[in-house]
Length: 430
Image 1 (cartoon, helix red, strand yellow):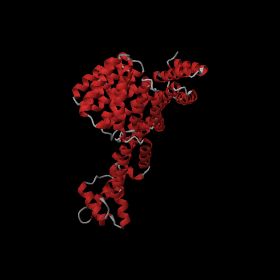
Image 2 (cartoon, helix red, strand yellow):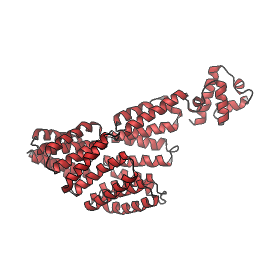
Image 3 (cartoon, helix red, strand yellow):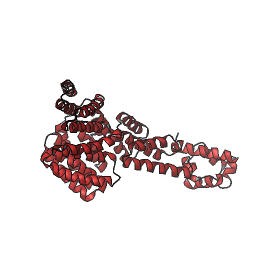
Image 4 (cartoon, helix red, strand yellow):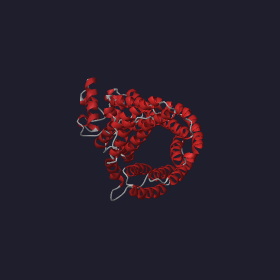
């Protein structure tokens, strides 16, 4: 039902509640036939006419236009603000509950833009909770039912998240199709920050499915596009995407150089929470490229950890910081200190996406194995196996099984180790 039909129905309902005829409502400013046309949805009243009718009916203009009172509108907008704040602060389960409650309120029926905001927020929160199937369903429904009313920027944002969801679920073909549906046409849209971000999601999908030549070529194109856009954020996104491809292809020194450039630019232009988060990701690449610099990485991450504790940044980045601190301490041969950090990770892991849960339990198993706590390491690996049983068969899952196999060897569980090796091979089709 279109908006003018709903407005007409509300005018008709309130008129009848007040005991007015159409002629009584119309007189003297309007004709009763004009009121009849408005109520039947055949005429769209001007703002001035709507304001006049609201005065005559002794109801709020907000109610006639949107189907809610001014007080209800304030409550809905406040609810959306609280849900968004919860999502930004990493309280993803709380955000998901709040968005779902808002969408269950009939008051949103006449507020298509706010309803779309709530549906998009619910999809983001569902993804952040690790429910990839649920997020994909919500995003596809949003694209299908709200497409006509969706701003171009929102179209791109939905495509970015949908591409990431498909990639994280292991459906790389779908991930590529979603992004290429916007970026790969005969006539490519004018580059923007949003399209650069979509390009980085596409680049990650190329790299993960092993299409490294295409990833390398597209990375260069993305870098050129970022220069055209000319904003610091676009440049940082493109540099980071190139760093990911370099790391995937084993060019760790190149990856580190690109990550350092991205961090330098963002440190000057980004907001503090984002800079702290990027430092955590930079530490990951630095530990891979230069494990002999683990002490410097640990010191940097310790400073970032303090910054994160004092900020409202999401729990995901706090967890990642503790995770990489654990890795640094293990590289420095300090498993006891690593155990303290990994406990922080495990305390936060419950609401995280499944891939992060897997990485956390894997690292915990390594720390426990090095401490000689074989029983605890075995328990962590049982959690890993349960998560990997439901994971997609891709290179990331294969690597996780391979890591698990090596830890199982270390704690002298040969049968489980062989099984883990076999599962790793199966994930890559061997």
